Length: 226
Image 1 (cartoon, rainbow, N blue to C red):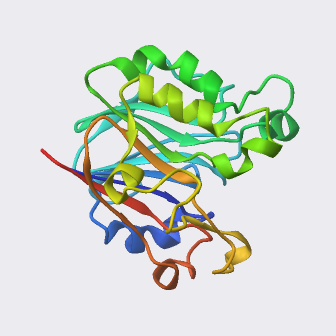
Image 2 (spheres, helix red, strand yellow):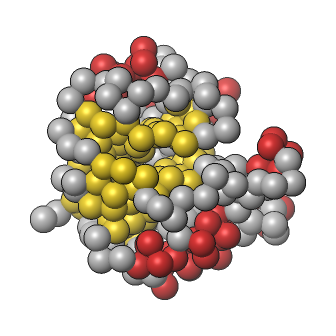
Image 3 (cartoon, rainbow, N blue to C red):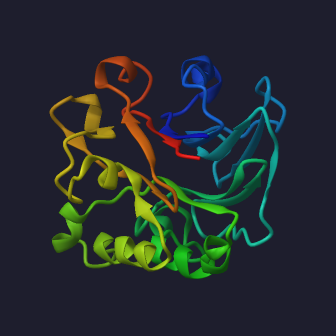
């Protein structure tokens, strides 16, 4: 089974053919527009968000799914889904920016989302937590509000491992491959997209040359071992 996460940087409609060429079974896609569930061919589209042009979606290819009843709109943006391939919590974390963007009633802290969705994450059918976390331990010293090391440790206690780091034997904050290229500059590379999963698998990261035309992010892809 193949899981892909990609921040498409708006207008998924025009980029669908490009990302579908990766042949995912489940695609978690950030900064995408609200569309009907049957909009894309041979797939089922689930979406949450506060801005109809810029939310969080999950595409299930050659299958179907639904948003889990535990979903909370005020936690932005996290989407718990049940699919034919298993359950998954999709992420586009706003962190401390949630209240700035949407007001006092909204919370973007991944730590609080883990607390709320802990029972969902613990379910045997849940594959893991996948997406754009907008965070790295390289910022922990200057951003004590959302220390990412705490998030990593909480996932570990829940039995989830970053498959990129385990596969490549790399430390958090010392990644050799970036997933975000700030202002689309190749030298402004950060690793902020993660696949925290129960299973191991083969991980690949899209290349800057292949994807920068479409987004400031590149996809991160895992083929899970059966």
